[in-house]
Structures are given as C-alpha cells and as structure tokens.
Image 1 (tube, one colour):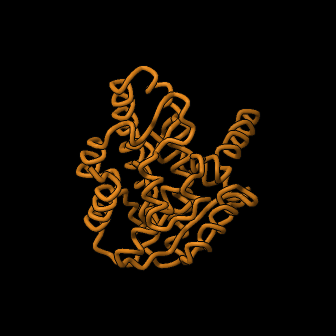
Image 2 (cartoon, rainbow, N blue to C red):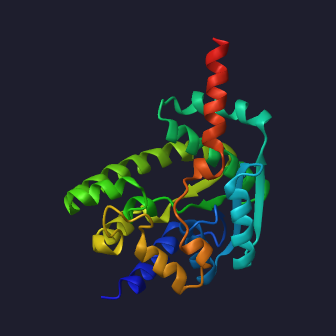
Image 3 (cartoon, rainbow, N blue to C red):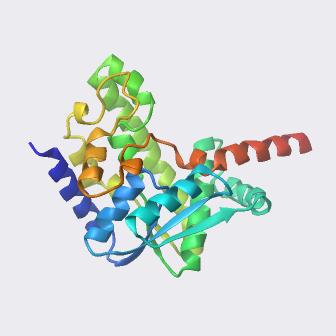
Length: 257
C-alpha cells in the first residue's frame, strides 16, 4: 500500500475540513511538521503567513528564517522581550492554573503567536500538533518500541490525550486575541487514519534517533528542503528558548517569596 500518498490525501482532507477561511497563518518553527503543514496548505490554495516567536538568537528564529526563504512563503517573526515575558508568564499561570510545565510553556508560546496573528489581522492559525504523538516523534517512543508495539500504542494514546487537553487550554489563551488555533492533525478522523499506518513506518527500533519516517518521506516528496525534512525534533519551548527563560523567571520568583 502507498502510505505516503494516503497520508498526503488525509492531511489535505483534514486541513480542508478544519477551516472555511482561505486566509490563515501557520505556527512555524521551520521543522518538518510545520513546514509540511505550510506546504500542503499552500498547495491546496490557502493564502498563508508563517508566524514564528522566540527569544533573540534562539534556534527557531534563525532556522525558521532560512526554511521560510527556501519555501518562498511570507514569514513574520516576534522577538520575545525579557521585560514582557515575566508579565505574560504570570498572566498565563493565573489563567490556566496548572503545575504542568509543558502546558505553561506551550500556552506562553501560543500567547505570543496569537498576538502576532492579531497584529496581522488573521483570525485562524493552524498548528501541526498531533504529528509527534501519532508518528512517534518523541524520544520516549524509543523506549516503548523496545517493549513492543502494544507499549507504543499505549504511549501514543496517553500522549494524544494530554495533547488534546493541553490545546483546549491553549485555545483559551488565543481566544483573548480573537484567534482560533486549529489542529487538523488532532481531528478524530485523522487520528483514526494515522493509527492504521504500521508502526515500522514511524519508528524502526530503540536506536532510532530520527523517527517519523513516513512524515519525512512525504515532506521530501512534496519539496520540503532536506534541512527541514530530516531535522531531529526540537520542541517549541526549547527551540524558542521559552523553557530556559521560564525556569529562570520561576527561580527569580522563588527568591522573592
């Protein structure tokens, strides 16, 4: 079976079903997931603007610039200032009220993404959330595959549940700016399809440092630069330096009280 073609068809269908707006933004790091989402959206007729946020000199800022240029897509960047970051962090903490560090980091990142979208008059932002969960993008899948496919499936379901709940909280943040954050690859239909793709199309063994093989193959097939398609995963909160700065801010707070 040609899983690459099937995957492309399902991604196109999920995107088309997710929004009626033809003018959208893409939350963009330059990595394979967001680049693939952007390329498919462009190919099927969406007018897209790539949005990147991060601290100055962060990995995502420089990398996204290069990939956006290669793809020849419109791209705007917001450099997070240390002065605004502490205030935004406090606001997010009060709004979502969770000790989950990853949820806080993602809410902070998408706060800035949503604000950037609002600045450009865009009400719909698509994100590639779901690909790492469904196609074994996380390093934890290496340990799971060593225990067998059932362990991989169990971990996948757990991570999907967490991601879906987290994005509900993220959308509370984006709604403050009149922006809808949409995850076409977390739709029920796409999840059901992705689970039919054999595990060995996603991860080979516990030594597999790349993973998401079928996603990378599709990316190369439709013209994503190798620098992006074959790049190892770097989570949003790390690539943007949000994690590093959040830890620093929290240490400052703990010294205050």
